Image (cartoon, rainbow, N blue to C red; front, side, top):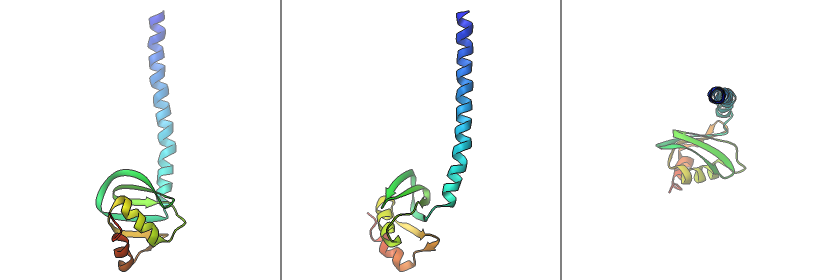
Length: 114
């Protein structure tokens, strides 16, 4: 009898684990998609980076490869860009609220890269 209960217990554990994982994926996937649609900052890096999150001037940035997106900060785009490139590297483009930095502003921003 004891073996029968432990056998069913392990199967039940696997079933519960699979159900929890499925629920997590159903909840997390739409939120990740919504976050990408509402990003205030977007940047393309010259050199790819491993996927990581970083706080830059009170904005949360997520970069994966050469693509980055970030939440809104309370600083001007030029200042956020300068801090961003110190953290992630040279940017090929940097956009704030749909407005890209012009070539001169982007060059000044990239001059701050470490």
